[in-house]
Length: 403
Image (cartoon, rainbow, N blue to C red; front, side, top):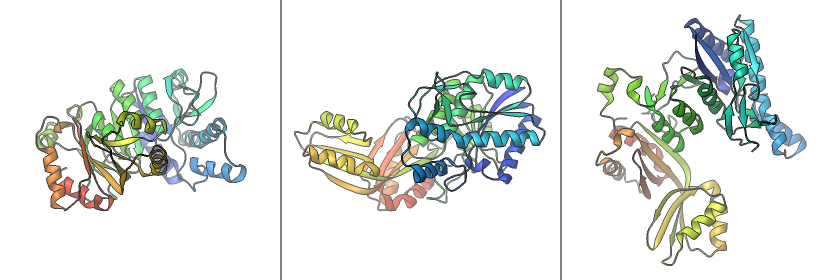
C-alpha cells in the first residue's frame, strides 16, 4: 500500500457536512489501495468557535497581550481540536485512526516562537501507526523544539507540514484539499476570464505565490520540489481533477494537452495591491547606504530600478509610515505614488522568447494604462500600474496571451 499525504484546510473541517466530505476522500483513497497520512488545519476562520483567530481574540480581549511562548501553546489548540475531531469521526465510520500533535508526528523546529523554522522530521510514530493499520491524523501548522517546547510555523504552516511529512515518509504524492477546484490562472474576484490550470511546474507556482497569488505557501512548494513529489491542489467538495504541480508539466499531462497548449508562453497572472512607489532624485545619493538602512528598518523593497541620478522602488503600503520616518530622519528628498498594483506574468516558456514584454506593454498602452515601473526575469514580467486599472489589465493580459 502506497503512502500519500492528504491535507485538509479550515473550510474542509469547519462543519459536520464538510467533515463527512473529508471522510469520503480518505475512504476513497483507501479503496484505491493507498494509505493516507492526514494533516488538518484549525476549524474555519475568525468567528468560528475554534478558529486560530478566534482563540487569539478571546485571550487578548480577556487577558491582554500574550507572550510568544504562550501564544504558540494557544495557537496549536485549533489544529489539535481538528485532529481529535477527525480521528474520532473516522473511527465512527469504521476507519481506524489516531490523532497526533505536530511534535508527536516528529516535526522538529527551532525555538523562534510563532514563526519557527523547520529543522527535520522524525516520523517514526506515524509510520508505526500506519504499520498497525491506522490512519494518522496530524495537527498542522505546528511542531516542537528538541526539548519539547510547542511551536508554530507561521501562516500557511499546515501546507508546509504536509510537504515536510510527505518528503520524510517518501509519499507518492501530496494532496492539498481546499474549497476551490485547483490553481487558477488569476484571481476570479478580479477577472472573470480566469480558469483552472490542469498542470503547472513547481517553479511557476512558486513564482505565483511569491507574486501574490494565494495558492499554496512557497515553503510547501520548496519541500515537495526538493523531494520531487507531485503536489495536487483539489476541492474537498467536488470530484474535479485539480491542479498537478510537478518538476515539468509533461510528466503528468497527456500528449493531446501538450499539443493544444505548447504555444502558451504565459501560464498565469498574479498581483499584489497596496503598493507605494518612491522616487528619490539625488546625484550624490548613496543607494547602498539607504538600502542598508531600509533593510535594518525591516522594510522589504519590491520592484527597484537604480539610475545614476534617480532611484525608484516600491514597498507594501503597510510599511509606508515606517519608511517615510526613516527617509525624513536622514533628509532624503522623495516623491511617491500611492494606490498602485503590481501585476506579474508568469511562464517558464517565455524564457528566450523575444517580444513578450513588448506585447504586454502594447496591451496596456491600448487600454491607456499608465505603466509606472517594469521588471523581468527568466520566467516573470512585472508591471506597476494604478490599482484602479487592475481588473481590466488582468483580463486584457489573459486575452492577449491566450492564458
